[in-house]
Length: 226
Ligand code: ADE
Image (tube, rainbow, N blue to C red):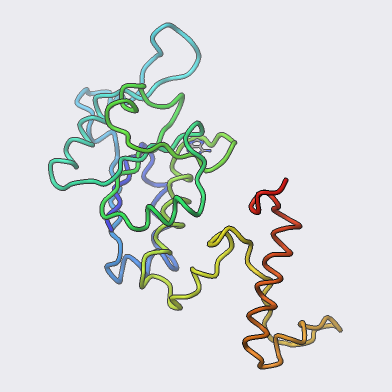
């Protein structure tokens, strides 16, 4: 998988890919991340990427030309499955979308700033608009990092234990069951006995029950209840 991220602040997006699981995924050749500084696609001397809104109003708008140049340049080199625009008014991101995106070959992620991009960018280049939640960030970069992290860890071979992504919360619309590790007792607080019983079919069914009960209590909406 190849992800090209278009941004005015590439610095925000360097460290997430330099550590831990994402770093290893890149080193294993399972994903390529390419950051593109939008200012490199500006022809004027002031390196201007935004301008006032037509019709007036507070806040600057990202101009179409540098974005067009960057996307057109990328598309001239390879095909892309999606051009994603990170924006608070996009479709709410969830595990289902993460699963779908993790199966794609090449994607472009465009990070918005200020009041966002000229609407014509959305109309003519963008194929999918994603919000990571109903709150406004100062730019799409951190949201893009969230999306990248959640999809890269799903690519086969990225996680050491293949099954661990499959047992994550939300993977089948249920929250994950509680987990414990040594010691089996700490300050009198005991691990549920079943987990140390060695009876794996029973442990599995306990985990399923716990998942269901936790979901019912904490996120009934996932079960279609409210
Ligand atoms: N850009 C600013 N806020 C955002 C959000 N909540 N999701 C995605 N991109 C954003």
